[in-house]
Length: 118
Image (cartoon, rainbow, N blue to C red):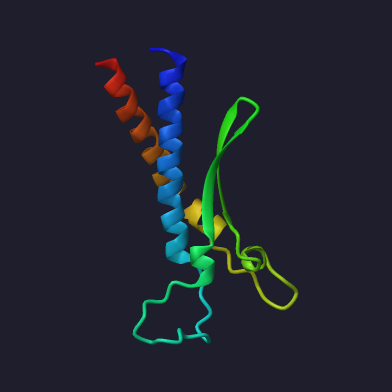
């Protein structure tokens, strides 16, 4: 099996795992209960939830999956300000789903490489 196929499997597995984790982060993203939506019949999604993005980066010879909130207040919610306690959502979702993410990543790699081995 050549290196290109292995890297293809790793990239695909990383993309899929980051997308799975992004949904987990969105599920626990905090929302201010004092700010109801303008139309109460509409499902609440919120700016912070929509602002969560992910990408894949190459750094030297390593591939890295990243996730961040591009909302200007996401950082403050994740860590803290002097006026409010932290309400972690990115780190919390990654910690709570670490084992599931690892097993998902391995399962996807095995599935992709199995196709090449037949």
